[in-house]
Amino acid sequence: MPSRRAMLAGLAALPPLALGLPRAAQAAWPDRPIRVIVPFAAGGNTDVVTRTIAQAMQETIGKPFVIENRAGGAGSLGAELAARALPDGHTLLAGSGGSLTANPVLQANLSYDTERDFAPIGLVSRVPIVLVVAPGFSARSWTDFLALAKATAGQLNVATPAIGTTAHFALETLNHQVGARLTHVPYRGGGSMVADLLAGNFDAALLELTTALPLHQEGKARILAVASEQRVTQLPAIATFIEGGVANFTSTSFTALLAPRGVPAEVIASLRLALLAGLALPAVTQRLIGLGCNPATPDEASPAGLAAYLRDELAKYREAARLAGLKPG
Image (cartoon, rainbow, N blue to C red; front, top):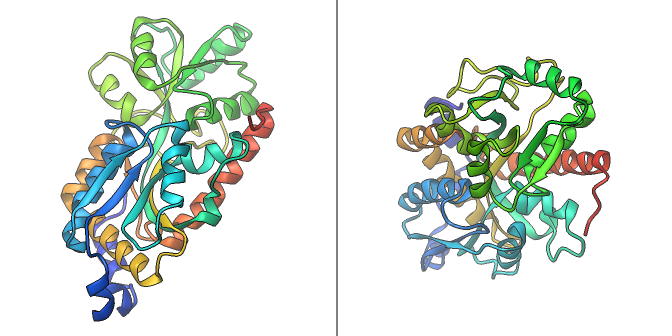
């Protein structure tokens, strides 16, 4: 988790131009509220994180940030809308794994290109994927779960929110790395899946920590492992998959801010300044951590940092799709 000191150091390191637009540009931008397109329904992780950081950023920018939920096509509808928007700095995209890294791998004839059609502003937060089971399930750890999976030869069912989600790619990678032969149970959204998890209608689920954390804290479900490099702040007693013997296995969803390609560099710099200022606020940091997120570091919360992150994620998704035999459709 980045410290407040690190965030403030990031602000101090910005070039003078980023500390404010030239006077002529200030009169032109922003001259109205800034629309932030969230390509999913209200209430999900991307939506909640975006609303949290947008509320903080508007204090720095001086204009309201208006959230517009445009769900559809696993995030592609909203992403296309943002990509085709006028590049004047008044329309942003709240990007995530679904719209920016899964869709380019799984959707044929996608109308936008993640790296070509967007100008990165910065990463906001990351959320690890976790393995969660109903309270009555026998395994008490990932190693117990893996041993049971191997002993039952493909009979364990693991649900994910949908085909093509970060959790689905995580499952395919796990099966390849450890030979678990876990059977995929895809849903069409997390709501019904959580209800079925609690009812014991399948053995386990791979979920974002933001969804699984309250279930674990309330004793309704148990998290067995976290797909992050280190144990998370919210669950220091829960081991990572890496600690359980799955070498280098990490899987995270994310929320990031982007603009249509062609937005002036000065506007991108000012938006990044506002993002850093928002992430430096203790109230924002505490809110994100409380949700189960890891706030972005100053390096990640930058155009270059986000561009590098997206390149790495796209490469991981393409390899996972290859291993699983998933083809664009």
